[in-house]
Image 1 (cartoon, rainbow, N blue to C red):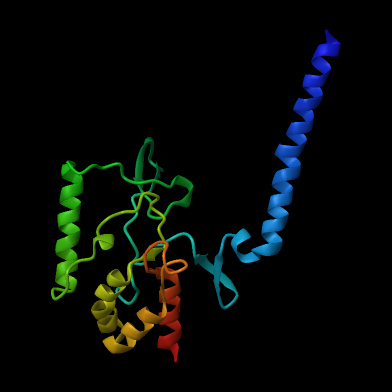
Image 2 (tube, rainbow, N blue to C red):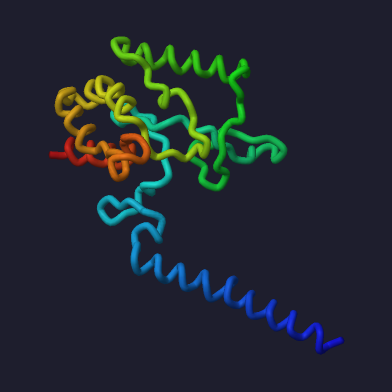
Length: 201
Protein backbone atom coordinates (compact mmCIF):
# COMPACT_ATOMS: atom_id res chain seq x y z
CA UNK A 1 0.00 0.00 0.00
CA UNK A 2 2.87 2.36 0.80
CA UNK A 3 4.17 1.83 -2.74
CA UNK A 4 0.86 3.16 -4.16
CA UNK A 5 0.67 6.13 -1.75
CA UNK A 6 4.33 7.22 -2.09
CA UNK A 7 3.99 8.73 -5.64
CA UNK A 8 0.94 10.72 -4.54
CA UNK A 9 2.80 12.07 -1.49
CA UNK A 10 5.87 12.94 -3.60
CA UNK A 11 3.73 14.76 -6.19
CA UNK A 12 1.85 16.61 -3.43
CA UNK A 13 5.08 17.76 -1.77
CA UNK A 14 6.70 18.70 -5.10
CA UNK A 15 3.70 20.72 -6.28
CA UNK A 16 3.39 22.38 -2.87
CA UNK A 17 7.05 23.43 -3.04
CA UNK A 18 6.75 24.63 -6.64
CA UNK A 19 3.38 26.42 -6.53
CA UNK A 20 3.40 27.41 -2.86
CA UNK A 21 7.02 28.55 -2.48
CA UNK A 22 9.14 28.69 -5.64
CA UNK A 23 6.59 30.31 -7.96
CA UNK A 24 5.39 33.04 -5.53
CA UNK A 25 8.98 33.89 -4.55
CA UNK A 26 10.06 34.06 -8.20
CA UNK A 27 7.13 36.29 -9.20
CA UNK A 28 7.67 38.54 -6.17
CA UNK A 29 11.36 38.86 -7.03
CA UNK A 30 10.67 39.61 -10.71
CA UNK A 31 7.99 42.17 -9.81
CA UNK A 32 10.34 43.86 -7.35
CA UNK A 33 13.09 44.07 -9.98
CA UNK A 34 10.94 45.14 -12.95
CA UNK A 35 8.35 47.30 -11.13
CA UNK A 36 9.96 48.33 -7.82
CA UNK A 37 7.57 51.20 -6.96
CA UNK A 38 4.43 49.23 -7.79
CA UNK A 39 5.69 46.14 -5.94
CA UNK A 40 6.02 48.28 -2.80
CA UNK A 41 2.42 49.55 -3.03
CA UNK A 42 2.86 52.61 -5.30
CA UNK A 43 3.66 54.67 -2.22
CA UNK A 44 3.72 58.45 -2.58
CA UNK A 45 6.27 60.46 -0.62
CA UNK A 46 6.55 64.14 0.25
CA UNK A 47 9.77 65.41 1.82
CA UNK A 48 10.92 61.81 2.38
CA UNK A 49 7.76 60.87 4.27
CA UNK A 50 5.11 58.48 2.93
CA UNK A 51 1.81 60.37 2.61
CA UNK A 52 -0.27 57.72 0.87
CA UNK A 53 -0.56 55.38 -2.08
CA UNK A 54 -1.42 56.23 -5.67
CA UNK A 55 -3.74 53.21 -5.63
CA UNK A 56 -5.80 53.87 -2.49
CA UNK A 57 -7.88 57.00 -1.97
CA UNK A 58 -7.87 59.00 1.23
CA UNK A 59 -10.24 61.45 2.78
CA UNK A 60 -9.70 65.18 2.27
CA UNK A 61 -12.22 67.32 4.16
CA UNK A 62 -10.59 70.76 4.11
CA UNK A 63 -12.04 73.17 1.55
CA UNK A 64 -8.55 74.03 0.33
CA UNK A 65 -8.14 70.51 -1.08
CA UNK A 66 -9.87 68.61 -3.85
CA UNK A 67 -12.11 65.86 -2.46
CA UNK A 68 -12.22 62.31 -3.76
CA UNK A 69 -15.11 59.93 -4.24
CA UNK A 70 -17.20 58.99 -1.26
CA UNK A 71 -16.20 55.79 0.50
CA UNK A 72 -18.63 53.34 2.10
CA UNK A 73 -16.02 51.26 3.94
CA UNK A 74 -16.59 50.51 7.60
CA UNK A 75 -14.73 49.23 10.67
CA UNK A 76 -15.84 47.49 13.87
CA UNK A 77 -17.40 49.82 16.42
CA UNK A 78 -14.87 50.11 19.29
CA UNK A 79 -17.78 50.32 21.75
CA UNK A 80 -19.81 47.41 20.36
CA UNK A 81 -18.07 44.73 18.28
CA UNK A 82 -21.41 43.57 16.85
CA UNK A 83 -21.81 46.90 15.01
CA UNK A 84 -19.80 48.86 12.49
CA UNK A 85 -18.94 52.54 12.10
CA UNK A 86 -17.98 54.48 8.97
CA UNK A 87 -14.24 54.31 8.23
CA UNK A 88 -13.62 55.99 4.86
CA UNK A 89 -10.96 54.36 2.67
CA UNK A 90 -10.42 51.49 5.11
CA UNK A 91 -8.21 49.24 2.99
CA UNK A 92 -8.63 46.38 5.47
CA UNK A 93 -12.36 46.25 4.74
CA UNK A 94 -12.81 47.14 1.09
CA UNK A 95 -16.37 47.11 -0.21
CA UNK A 96 -19.42 49.10 -1.18
CA UNK A 97 -22.49 49.95 0.85
CA UNK A 98 -24.72 47.30 -0.80
CA UNK A 99 -27.54 49.87 -0.91
CA UNK A 100 -29.68 49.34 -4.01
CA UNK A 101 -31.58 51.79 -6.23
CA UNK A 102 -34.76 51.34 -4.17
CA UNK A 103 -33.03 52.11 -0.86
CA UNK A 104 -34.51 55.13 0.96
CA UNK A 105 -31.26 55.58 2.91
CA UNK A 106 -29.32 55.82 -0.35
CA UNK A 107 -31.86 58.22 -1.91
CA UNK A 108 -31.77 60.46 1.18
CA UNK A 109 -27.97 60.49 1.26
CA UNK A 110 -27.76 61.27 -2.48
CA UNK A 111 -30.23 64.16 -2.15
CA UNK A 112 -28.33 65.60 0.80
CA UNK A 113 -24.98 65.35 -1.01
CA UNK A 114 -26.33 66.83 -4.26
CA UNK A 115 -27.92 69.75 -2.38
CA UNK A 116 -24.66 70.42 -0.51
CA UNK A 117 -22.63 70.36 -3.72
CA UNK A 118 -25.13 72.60 -5.54
CA UNK A 119 -24.68 75.15 -2.75
CA UNK A 120 -20.93 74.88 -3.26
CA UNK A 121 -21.08 75.44 -7.04
CA UNK A 122 -24.59 76.40 -8.23
CA UNK A 123 -23.48 77.13 -11.81
CA UNK A 124 -22.42 73.59 -12.71
CA UNK A 125 -24.08 70.18 -12.87
CA UNK A 126 -22.97 67.88 -10.05
CA UNK A 127 -20.72 65.09 -11.44
CA UNK A 128 -22.06 61.66 -10.53
CA UNK A 129 -18.75 60.44 -9.08
CA UNK A 130 -18.87 63.11 -6.36
CA UNK A 131 -22.09 61.65 -4.91
CA UNK A 132 -21.62 57.92 -5.52
CA UNK A 133 -19.26 55.46 -3.87
CA UNK A 134 -17.06 53.07 -5.79
CA UNK A 135 -17.48 49.30 -5.48
CA UNK A 136 -14.23 49.02 -3.53
CA UNK A 137 -14.60 52.18 -1.45
CA UNK A 138 -10.92 52.85 -2.14
CA UNK A 139 -11.00 54.65 -5.51
CA UNK A 140 -8.09 57.15 -5.67
CA UNK A 141 -9.33 58.88 -8.84
CA UNK A 142 -12.12 61.23 -9.85
CA UNK A 143 -13.25 62.34 -13.28
CA UNK A 144 -11.80 65.55 -14.74
CA UNK A 145 -15.35 66.95 -14.51
CA UNK A 146 -15.43 66.24 -10.76
CA UNK A 147 -12.11 68.04 -10.33
CA UNK A 148 -13.25 71.00 -12.44
CA UNK A 149 -16.46 71.21 -10.39
CA UNK A 150 -14.40 71.76 -7.23
CA UNK A 151 -12.17 74.48 -8.69
CA UNK A 152 -14.28 77.46 -7.44
CA UNK A 153 -14.30 76.16 -3.83
CA UNK A 154 -10.56 75.48 -3.78
CA UNK A 155 -9.83 78.82 -5.45
CA UNK A 156 -11.83 80.66 -2.76
CA UNK A 157 -10.23 78.71 0.09
CA UNK A 158 -6.68 79.31 -1.18
CA UNK A 159 -7.20 82.73 -2.74
CA UNK A 160 -5.87 81.41 -6.07
CA UNK A 161 -7.27 82.23 -9.49
CA UNK A 162 -9.60 79.65 -11.00
CA UNK A 163 -7.60 79.77 -14.24
CA UNK A 164 -4.45 78.66 -12.41
CA UNK A 165 -6.35 75.76 -10.85
CA UNK A 166 -7.85 74.77 -14.21
CA UNK A 167 -4.30 74.48 -15.59
CA UNK A 168 -3.27 72.37 -12.58
CA UNK A 169 -6.25 70.02 -13.04
CA UNK A 170 -5.50 69.64 -16.75
CA UNK A 171 -1.82 68.92 -16.02
CA UNK A 172 -2.83 66.17 -13.57
CA UNK A 173 -5.43 64.54 -15.83
CA UNK A 174 -4.46 61.10 -17.11
CA UNK A 175 -5.95 59.95 -20.40
CA UNK A 176 -7.23 56.56 -21.45
CA UNK A 177 -4.67 53.74 -21.42
CA UNK A 178 -3.32 53.42 -24.98
CA UNK A 179 -5.95 56.00 -25.91
CA UNK A 180 -8.66 53.29 -25.69
CA UNK A 181 -9.02 51.67 -22.29
CA UNK A 182 -10.79 53.29 -19.34
CA UNK A 183 -11.80 56.89 -18.86
CA UNK A 184 -9.79 60.06 -18.28
CA UNK A 185 -9.11 60.47 -14.56
CA UNK A 186 -7.43 62.63 -11.97
CA UNK A 187 -5.58 61.11 -9.02
CA UNK A 188 -6.78 63.17 -6.04
CA UNK A 189 -3.65 62.69 -3.92
CA UNK A 190 -1.34 63.67 -6.80
CA UNK A 191 -3.49 66.72 -7.58
CA UNK A 192 -3.51 67.87 -3.95
CA UNK A 193 0.25 67.44 -3.65
CA UNK A 194 0.71 69.46 -6.85
CA UNK A 195 -1.63 72.07 -5.39
CA UNK A 196 0.46 72.32 -2.21
CA UNK A 197 3.65 72.70 -4.29
CA UNK A 198 2.06 75.41 -6.45
CA UNK A 199 0.78 77.26 -3.38
CA UNK A 200 4.21 77.17 -1.74
CA UNK A 201 5.85 79.04 -4.66
